[in-house]
Image (cartoon, rainbow, N blue to C red; front, top):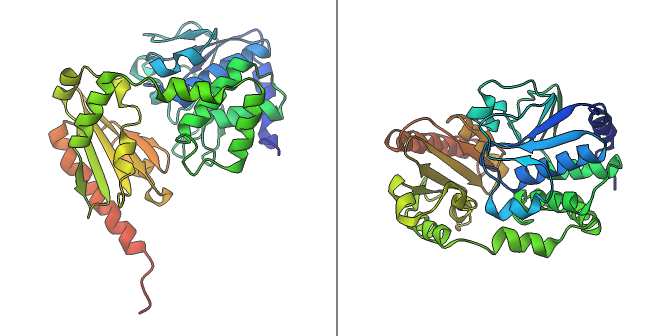
Length: 336
C-alpha cells in the first residue's frame, strides 16, 4: 500500500526546511491519546531530521499517556509558550484549541496536521484529512511514505493515537489500511499489549465513583434517541474525581441500544463543557457542537457554551429536537 504519496514528501521537505530553527509542536487543551501521541511523534520525527523541536501543552499529559512520552522534550503544563522560531499544531481544528493561555497572543502557525472535519485551515501549510481516523494515522502514513525515521518510542506514540481515536479499533475509521499501518508500527517497536494495559487497565477509584454518578444521571430525550449524562458541580467534590477522569465516559451514553447520540455535560465552578458521540456520521455532531462554541468530528465533538447549566440544558434539548426533526423530514418516505 501507499501512504498519502501526494503530500508525504512535501511534508518531509517542509520539516527539513526547519533545520536551524527552534520548533514548538502545540497540541489541544485537555489532551487525549491522539493529541499526545501526535505531539510526541512529530517532535521525534523533526529531531530525527535534524530539527530542534519540543512539544508544548497548556494542560498536563494524562496519567495513562505519560509513559509514552519517553525522553521526548515535552513542556506541560505551561502558562506561556517557551521561546521558539516556528510553531506547528497537531490534532487542533481551530487555533483557540491550544488554550486560552497559549492563544491569548497566538503565534503564526507554520503547519497544521489534523483530521477534524471542522478544521478551518488556519496555518500556512495545512495537512488536514477528515477521512482518516487520527492525527497519528496521518503522521504514520507520512513517515512510512517519505522514509522519515521511526524509532520504538515514535512507533508507540503513533500506535496509541490511532488506537484511542478509533475507539480501540471499533469506529468507522478502523479501515484495513489502519491495521496495516499498526502492523508496521509494531514492526518498528510499538507494543500493542503494553499500550492497552497503560490506557485501559489503571482506572482510579475516583473515576469509577464518577462513572457511577454519571450513569445514575442519564436522561433520555428525542424519543430515547439521545441520552444525556450530567456531572454536576458537587460530584467532583463527592468523588474526588478530576477533569481527566471524564475521558471515555460519554461513550457509555452512546452505546445504549436505540440511542443515536450520547451527550456528556460537565458543570464546573465557573464554566460548563461537554461532548457529543454519535453512532452514525449522518448526525454531524460537529455542526451541533458549533452551535455551542465547539466542533470536532462528524461522530465525536466537544462544546463550551459559555452559559450556566440551567441556561444551557433547554437550549441543548431544543437544538437536538430540531436536529432529529430535520433528520426525520429528510428521510425517504415509504411508497405504500
